[in-house]
Image 1 (cartoon, rainbow, N blue to C red):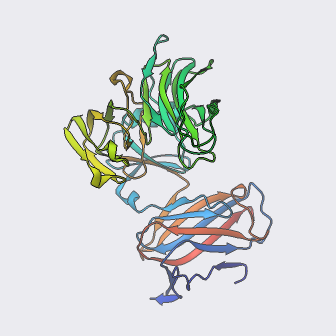
Image 2 (image 1 turned 60 degrees about the vertical axis):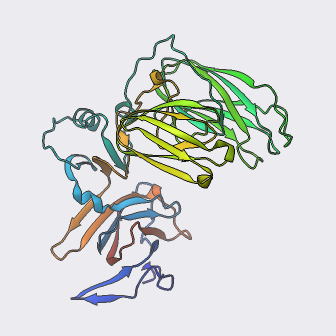
Image 3 (image 1 turned 90 degrees about the vertical axis):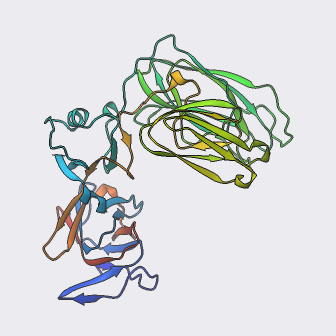
Amino acid sequence: GKDAYLRNMTSQGRLTRSMSIEGDTFRNMTGSPLYFYITPGNSISNHTNITVELKFKGDSDLDIGVYPDYAWKPLHIKNLENYTPVKQFGDVVIYAKNDSGNYTDYDTINEWISENIPGGSTIGLYDYEMDSEILMNRFVTDENAYTEINQTFRGSLSFLINLNDSLNLTLSKQDMNWYDGSDEYLIELYDADGGLIFSDIIPDDGIIDNSSKRKPPQIQTFFRGSIREGSYELRLVNIQGENKAADSTITSLGINTDKIITQGTILPLNPAKLFFDLKQNTTLKFNVWQGKAVQNISIHGEMDKEIVINKSLLGKWVPVELPEGSYNMDIKGNLYISGADFAFIQESLFQPYKYEINNENNQWVIISNYQIEKDSYGWTSAKKNFKGSDLELYNDKMIVFGLTNKTNSEVMLNEFKVTLTPR
């Protein structure tokens, strides 16, 4: 009807016409997203509870979102059938892939996780944010600790560091001036909860054209006191501005910690020996784009490997699979590297996180606001709760829900029901 309907997307190949088998009427979802329009009978406040229930058949992973942001949330996760629910706190359920059945009970979820899930475990999080107090390992950083990294990095990069009670950072920056535009570095420090606690800038060197002229490196020191002991993320962001590409480098770094590792993709320009630990089978990736940077990469550790990057591989990501273990690696430089957290001094290695958060391959799953039931006829009913504050009315009158199919298999849709409380 006009007050509740599924947008007709048959012509886009996302939906079949209505069919009926053994008294069950349904339509096949053959593409995504689909959109459901609901006109509520009463006004909606921020505190209105909105429960969505989808009745369907199929093995697909389904996500649901609501207008205007469509922040997709899991409605059905097929892989959870391989896990066992072992503990529930309110609407939060903890699942184990290999259920030992041997757990110590606690009153709070933080205590339960800390005491029952072993350190180093991989955990998938859905609609749940883990408290940083239990996510992070604790380390003691000597108040006199200091590390220097004499390596040139091009572009933006990120480090994980452990600090005692302050940040004392010295950076050396040199602009390449290959492109027109200003070259600045934004220095940011984030706590374990993602909160920004420090920010500053290294300005341009004064050359904003593409002359390729280079001035001596700019050296700048940054200090931030009165911080809590623990792990932090240090971001060095090369503000691209009007430049066509990253046009500045960090030529050295000094910092008051003995625990510092890179995270994400890095672009070191000089020869170096890198150290890294892998907690599971991992694929490293390398990318060389200049002929003068063709090189052999030597990896030693749990498995020894020699990777030859020749001219035929220029501009291509070269994958290298490695098993769990500790490694060191020799590079010539001028290449992108991703897949692990690297230290430039072996003693700088540390594991900032007690657990690895990974929604692709995990031993545990923690999920909130997730309800699944199956009936004797093979139909699955999946529920998701929203608040009025989660949405805006489309055209000031309609709630719009989006449904996405994350796999390729078809889904038989039987019923989509929305309940508002209070009515």
